Length: 220
Ligand SMILES: Nc1nc2c(ncn2[C@@H]2O[C@H](COP(=O)(O)OP(=O)(O)OP(=O)(O)O)[C@@H](O)[C@H]2O)c(=O)[nH]1
Ligand SMILES: [Mg+2]
Image (cartoon, rainbow, N blue to C red; front, side, top):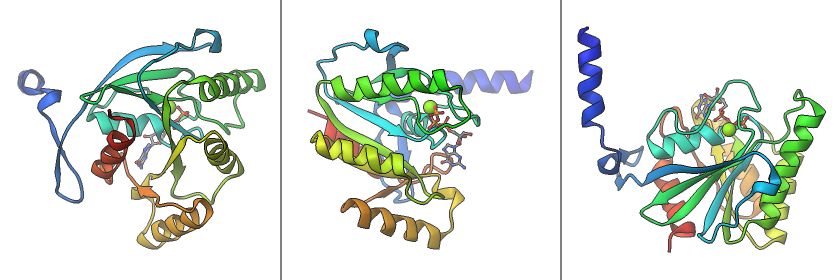
């Protein structure tokens, strides 16, 4: 009974638009609001969105949906699962202020999904990437525990060839020691020729820097 009362009190005090996030730099940044506006399962239903968009792409299980939740300061805004292949749709989250969209995409490279399912996700992902008007940037999420993978590099090359800004983001930094983090950042920096952000959704690391980069790329 006591627990229930205090949870209710906490919920009523919880006002997202007034939340400040504080990360490892101890720097306060006004928490933008994220609202899920559209979920699309088949490529023929992809909307023509006029506003700028930034897509979160990466291997299945790399932590795309978790990072979205961490950015929003919410636990269950985007669906997360320990089993790869959780996000099967393209999900449009409106960011305000800023008036742009963050788009959560299905992951790739999940070998154990049925071939037909994988083909369907790949079609959806490809069609989205090819046709999204106003795709300002591709946030390419990379697991800090893994060596560079062929399909990540392919996607980076696709973004470059399509003149879409690339925002490489290492995830799950809490799972890596300091040496591994530095090694991985150097490895990717040399491959892509640009700086790599380091984040952890679990520990809320690097979120201020990431928000700044996202707002810089997507905001008007
Ligand atoms: N330790 C740790 N675990 C994380 C972090 N981010 C995500 N995870 C875990 O990794 C698993 C996959 O996370 P998701 O966010 O669902 O990954 P996803 O990239 O959206 O996966 P798909 O939707 O399958 O493409 C979950 O068990 C998360 O709890 C992190 O920063 N640290
Ligand atoms: Mg997901």
